[in-house]
Length: 612
Ligand code: F6R
Image 1: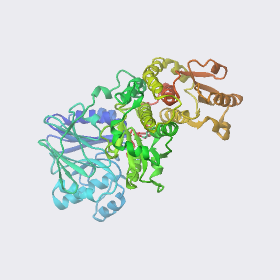
Image 2: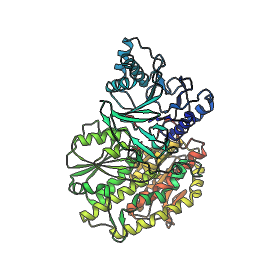
Image 3: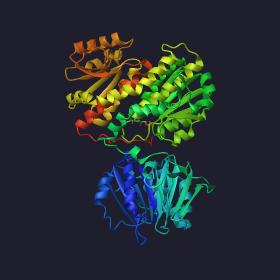
Image 4: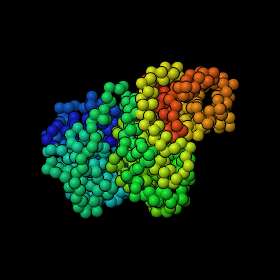
């Protein structure tokens, strides 16, 4: 959830660490801190509640000068966001310094043992327990590496850590279990980070730590081993990521940039994976499980948040086009209810970050039952991507805005490709032929671009609703999950309460909410549900609700019913969610931006939820 950066080399560490922390702020940003080894071999720590920019403004750069250090940007799990709870944390005597992502589950047990040894604690954090445990083991071993190793074997839970020791100040020790960590290998310098974006300015050579591994990093190099003390030899890999890709590129916010990129990002998802002459899709990463997919009893899709909404669309697609039964599960619920999983089930996990703790746990649960696991993931080399049996990357590029946008449409596109691949193999008689689907797919980027180019029209609608307190989003069939996604986008970045509902369910409860102040976004494309949707709109109008209809360009009739119209190009049902979600992303973006909300870093949220 939080971000870690460490540096050891010949340059001044502070600006490099601050720069890295800024790149990681999307992971967590309620407090930040650094420890620098100064020229007198002293470890100096500065930390405070607030963003990295506050840290940068307030730190004394002359004093915090040295060529080694570690830093952290935090999203609170144990203990409120405050100066004292911010990382780095130090042992009671200040000799060991630690930054930590994840949660130490048995911290109370460890803390009680340390209290018996006369340790005192200044914070409520689990991290302070770990740093004191390392201190305790250092006192016994007088060997920093050993002390870290022994301490980590006693820890239950998850961690990505970087730590330093006053008595062996020329090294950083990093370790990982369940929380991503890598080392970036530069020329005469080495970085430690929880995410490649923090090292990209300095090196493209990285080594991802595996669970249960640690790295000892010094100016002269690095060594890898497991916490059981077995040496690990692994070559650095070359990152295929451009720094420009993770910068705003002239847009006011990352979220706006990411919404506007979607005509390109969906092409990146399907490029090289579909034959436009036949409509046949091929996904290299799934070839080894294709047979199993075709024979499967059922598919279970599991994910969280936006990725779960993509899963709901996937359920419609796969059931309708491939006639395979599909269940969709919140990953956070799935693992705890002793799910019935058969070895011939296919479990599809969808995750932008590939690090979401609940999704990862659901994946591991499925593996325990011997099911075949497939990932639909964005972040290359992420834990989920590495742990699934087979998978497909969505290739949406780094998504920095906390609210997921382009990853959603690329997740949908991956599900389209899976559907097309299976439909061909299953020989199902399709409502639209494979060829006509492929032809429409070719037109899709142009249609998306058309919406991006006229985004001012969506903004004008947004301006009318900046002061609304509540919203309803309604859709049917494929568009019900789109309604859920539209509502989620609005609430997470503008803090306006919003609910998504299947349009026909409205009369079973939510209709009670409707009055002249209630805006209702109704997804009303020209498809076989159109007449029914018009009836739903009439029910809203009869109660004086304000109708914002999402309607196709050619639909003149809608003007008789809607107060405001979000126009979208017509497409085939399979692609409708990809098209229809885009005006809803713009609507929530503009409402939040006009309200002056922190769009890219909404309160209480973090980009990647690596805690349960
Ligand atoms: C919503 C959002 C979250 C994520 C969810 C899963 O905009 O970003 O709901 O979709 O936390 O994250 P990933 O896809 O990284 O597993």
